[in-house]
Image (cartoon, rainbow, N blue to C red; front, side, top):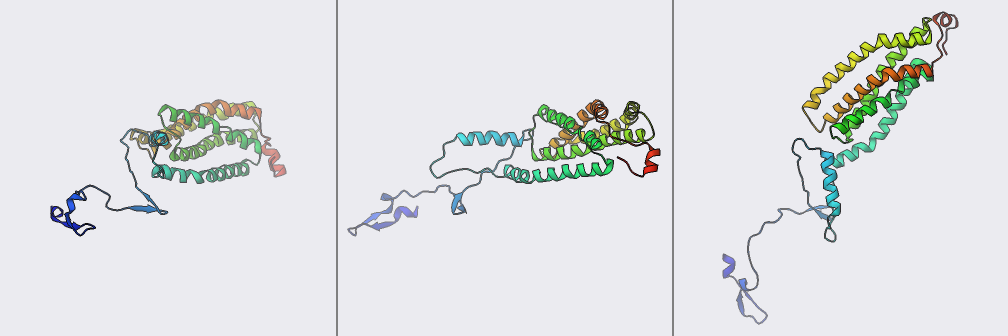
Length: 261
């Protein structure tokens, strides 16, 4: 090396070889030094193999990092998908509140009484139970896409329950007795509701088979929720209607008064 033949002068002016003072050799180093808020930082990126859950893997890595003793002045920050999910969850609460209040307002305008609205909304917990069980069965976590699936599930549940309650109200307006109207509506509407639910599940099954961290949790939530709400609502909705029967005027009285209570 050229450095072996270089000389430098000491304090007395005597030339000495540079190799006696320093050890010159090639070593790997960063080609650039990054800064953020005047602090140096490095980014470590990883990619998961197929079949692993991103949220669970992040939690395991964070637990190990929390136990690791960093040198003084060093710290870590989780970014990437975990950071994006945290930002997304930050505004999801407002969206859920707007969705729930909007749905309640639409149902009250549709039925014009609170009891029918309450009966329709009573199916929501039934679907949530099935959705959570499906996530646990597949080892999934409550990711952002799963939360979006819960919001979509509520709409599907309300639609099925609305058909049943509205048809029961129509039968009572025609003069049918309460218990007879509940039984008739359950028998007539059961098959259409089951068929629409099976159609929705059939469209979601390919999303589960071709697994993806992005859309598979959403499909699992919808499938589990639709199954449980369809089966349990067959029992719960008629019972709720029996316990909280809305006040329905027969058509004859409705035509005479021009109003409904």
